[in-house]
Every structure is written in structure tokens, then in C-alpha cells.
Image (cartoon, rainbow, N blue to C red; front, side, top):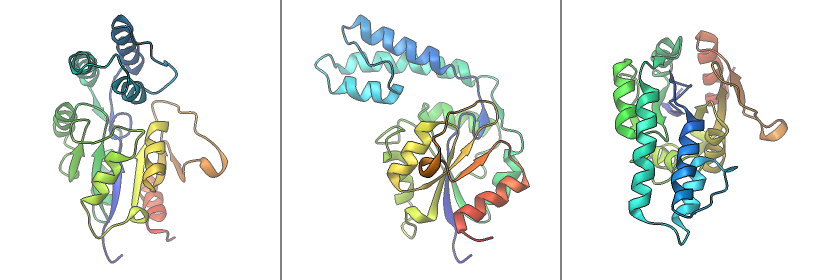
Length: 220
């Protein structure tokens, strides 16, 4: 292995087990927008709802600030009493020998950094990018492309994204990265066939680390 590659981890329910109430978050955003006269498509992911809102005639920076303040409140509550995913410390320590490890989350960047530091995971993470640092939120690929650009010797084929949700996979595919699904505490309805994740994991252990490196380096 002549050089380190790149692994981009999602945070919630991938690196850590949090208690973020995404349903409450989405319903609160929909409520705030509806009160302002904007009727959002509730079938869309939250980030896409907000992207469409920014392009509408109802948009105002003040209203967007109000939305994010409410989201911050829900996130801060949900991140309390978070725990590291079982086994993740050993996996990160091992993978750190072979790849640059970074985290990309749609969560508030300061809150994400604080909880990852409290749980002792930042010793292995070279970057933590949240919504303040990313030019686009997942499922858009901007954050992954920005992280990849930090490593000038690497291309998309040298990187792997790992996450628990479809928005993680969509961002990875648009960025040209391979994707590994991790689901222990929650279930996602993944596509099948050629659109399926390259790898499925449900726990962090030595075998998971081996499979990740096999996929990343395309060796047995």
C-alpha cells in the first residue's frame, strides 16, 4: 500500500449512537415554513426542502435563521448522552494506519466536534465537517468533494464513504465514491442490484475493518 487513501464517515448512528429525533426536526421545519406561507414537499429530505425554500419567493434569511435555531435545539437535545458505536474505537485505530479518516455530518459543526471529542474519537479524525463548513449538505455531494480536495494526491476512486442513511449513499455516488452501508441501531431501505451499497456492515469489529480495506484497496 503505497499511500493512504480516504474514508469519509457519517456521524450519527455510524460513529456514534445518538438520539437525534429526525422526525421531530422535519416536522418542526415544516411547521415553521408553513406558518410563513411556504408549503414544502414533505416527502423530500430535510436538506432538499430547505434548498427549495431558498429558491422560493417566500425565502428570507431571517426565517432560515429561525429554522436552523430550532434544528440546533433539537440536535443539542438528541446529542446528549450519545455513545460511541460499539467497537468503533478499535476499528478507527486500525484503519488510521491505512487511510485518512474524516467525518461529514449535516449536524451543527461545533456540536459534532464537541461530542466526538467527548467520546474520544477525534484522535483519529483528521477533519470534522458539519453544515457550517460544507458548501452543500447531504444528499448533495459538495461536502464529500470538499473533503476529497484536501488530499491533492487522491481521486474519487481512492475514497470510500460510510453511512447509515440513503442521503449518505446519494452524496457518495454523486461525488463518484464507493459507499459502504452501516446499520446497527436503525434499518434503512437500501436499493438493490447495481444501485446497492458496495458493502453492508452491522457491527464494528476486526472483520468489518478487513472488509473496508478490501473494498478500498480492491485486494483480498
